[in-house]
Image: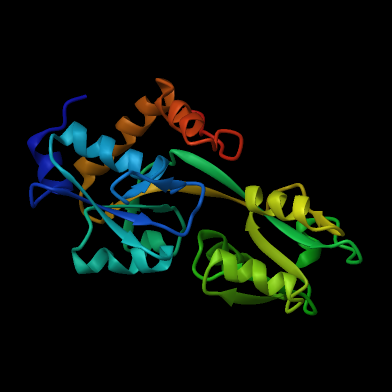
Length: 243
């Protein structure tokens, strides 16, 4: 698929594709290249899009997803690799997802939770990484439990293990690692939500949005996404959407 001139202008108006990258998601940014730049499926997607546009790629990094989302109005990135969420969709148009990540609840075995609905109780305190996609989902859907926001995924996990809360909401692969290294923990196997990792753009660029959806669908069908996940060692931790 060859991008039109309109698509190139919408996605790379400066002649460089400026790609916003969220560094906090260890599954999507799983390492560094020799020059110190981010490596992983998220930077891979950005570089691939730039290659298709035949322009250089500049990675614009953010420590947290909320910072990336806020910057959409600052004209410092052209695409932002970030999870879809309804609140963010007020200012960002999202592509269809290229990977899915389950988000689950972890708790101590002396708690009596069975289902996700059991967690939404007035006496329950849930640790979560602030302004993550699953934080925004909990904010919209949980009405009784107290959501305690931490500055990062690491800080949310630390809050749980320091007994400041009785439930930890996080990405399932990280929770499974916690269960391996700590005794007496239980996981509600059914995810309370699935994080849809997508490519975001500022609103008002319909041709670019259509191009990104076609490109991502092709990468999924051709096995490119699967190959990249395998290369980065995260194939068993991430799901690939059906197209």
